[in-house]
Amino acid sequence: MKKPAIFFDRDNTLIACDGYLGDPAAVRLIPGAAAAIARAHDLGFAVITFSNQSGVARGLFDETALVAVNEKMAQLLLQENRRAKIDRNEFCPFHPEATIEKYRKDSDLRKPKPGMILSAAAALDLDLRVSWIVGDAPRDIEAGYAAGCRTILVSNPALSPSPATLQPSSVDPDETVSSLGEAIEVIAATADEDDEPAQISNPGVEGELARIEHLLQRLLDQVRRQSEHPADFSLGKMLAGVTQILAIALAVGSYFYKPVGEPLMPMLVAIFLQILTISLLVMGREK
Ligand SMILES: [Mg+2]
Image (cartoon, rainbow, N blue to C red; front, side, top):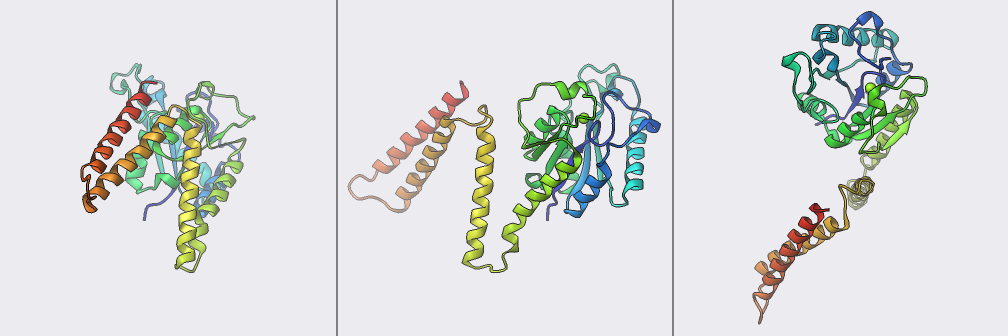
């Protein structure tokens, strides 16, 4: 069975860093990081970090130093809480304008692209639909949204913002909080809601109804999220979906139940609806 995960951004989310960090001795945990990771495990989540590290591409430090920083972070977390274990560290050393040629490329791993999340999901068999992204910058949220995860922006007033934090965003987070403790409580509350149908012991009609209600609620949540981003949702697309369903229903219906008198009429209407669907989609793309 696929496992849910929480993807934590590293810099200025788990450790204090508003620039580049290649020195393990300079690693400082953000207060609450170890407790949040331990709680994530208690809730049944795998814990992954995902971090753009263009300092490698810029020649400021090498991958060995980057791994040493991650190891120091892991050591400090476990010192503070024995259950604060990181299952996997993902990082992107590439940058389109790297000074070191082997790192110069527009990598799919680099946030806001979702490559690091997808890579971890493949390696650990993760269910991204019930996974979370927790980060301090818009690009963390955009990467999480692109991967189909739920997202939390941690806007910690005690930290000086990094340049990435100040970038404009095309995606709103599902939640905005001011600490890692608040973030993990949002996740815990949602995990409780997700588990509700599973607590019903009767697998009969009542259980099926609860399951359908739960699925509908998730569907409504998804529609609500999409409607908050007009680029992804439009009336035209919704109408196209409706006409597509009608077209398929008519085509299938006329195949099994041949109408007397005008046998071709339902198929002609189905073809008309299919053309209408394509027209609506094309009109939607030209916006
Ligand atoms: Mg960050």
